[in-house]
Length: 229
Image (cartoon, rainbow, N blue to C red; front, side):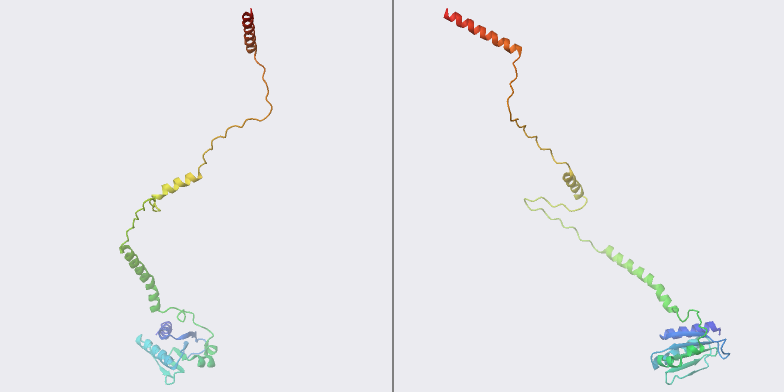
């Protein structure tokens, strides 16, 4: 089996059982016994055994060969020998004590398997937008089909002006009210003029008035003379 396909199968099998801190290293420059080494952690004896079983079944299903498994009776450190690749499944305390990364970790494989989302998870993520879209469509259809409540009209009480709903009908009235409030105030009637207080100036009579007065005086004198004669 191709080494790239083998390491992908191993990482997938470990991720299926929730393995922690999966590392894959290239060991071709260090030894001729195997080409890859994989190190992963399990939180309990039961999980380490389940991880080893998952790797074995996954490789066999895809036509790979499993040389042997060691340490599955205790579960603290289980080794799965796949020929070209060796898988170490360890509990965190054991892994921290032996530090296999310092021995074999000169060249870590950066093919993305140890950090990528598995195919099953990727399919689930791809389905989420579609499911969300279907939910939104169903919600919108429910809102559209829901019966709308009729607007209740309240009759005006006697002696009071009817209330006008705030809408298209109320806009012209509001505009007229706004214009009336902003219009110029009506002009007040002019107050009567006050008479000036001061000295009275006599104006000289005209010549016509003087002549008329003289004629009237002469006539009165003539009348008195006739009366006394």
